[in-house]
Image 1: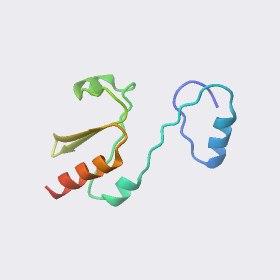
Image 2: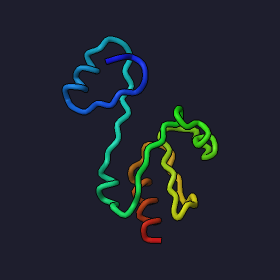
Image 3: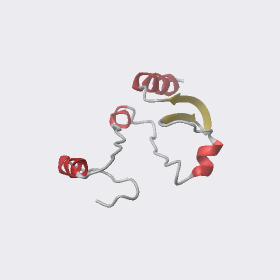
Image 4: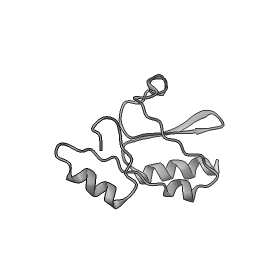
Amino acid sequence: MGKEGVHNLGSKADFDSALSEPGLMVLDCFATWFSNTYTDTRFYKLDVDEIPDVAQELSVRAMPTFIIFKDGQKVGEVVGANPTALEAAIKQNVAA
């Protein structure tokens, strides 16, 4: 695996291979179950390095940051890895 960029791991073998390489490795873990549970909600990922103007417009200062929009308006934000807070924010705005 090349050293530049972010690499997607698609299998245990990919993970094992990446882990066996010498040097520092950072693993960004995420799950898709929210999108499977809240099927009437759209989920997107934004790479702040690829689209810095949007990150700046949204004042993204920490990773991860989850911003919730409804009908084009920002209605919530969860900063940090807090699945309980994220699910609460989703539930609150799905029902609203």
